[in-house]
Image (cartoon, rainbow, N blue to C red):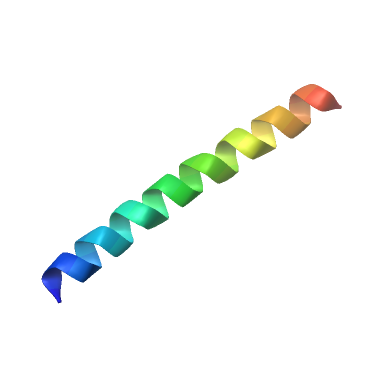
Length: 30
């Protein structure tokens, strides 16, 4: 279970990074 939680945290971090990139791209578009 510990492995799963670590993987989950890594995925969440990657998702937040992706979200930030998307928002930056949107700002550039506007």
